Image (tube, rainbow, N blue to C red; front, top):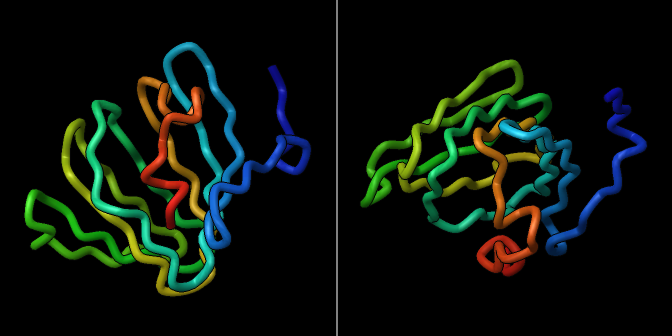
Length: 118
């Protein structure tokens, strides 16, 4: 399959958060658009995750108590292992590419209510 991001439908999750998804059998790519001030609440998932910041910056709070803080900026990548609790705060208008393995079933089924409140 061949894709052009501009042709992939954009899903508006909230006023400050939207995304585009490309999914294979064992991996998912997502363009995630966060407006400055957007907060992705603390959550964890079985999926291994890479977050590659294309534009902007996100501040991640990682771990059970959110005590590990990492700011990821354009050109940088954050790896999150399976089941690691994390949250993200958009320090600027941000476009990131998230890579998940396996694909996020909750995103595909629309059962990701925690994202729809941001």
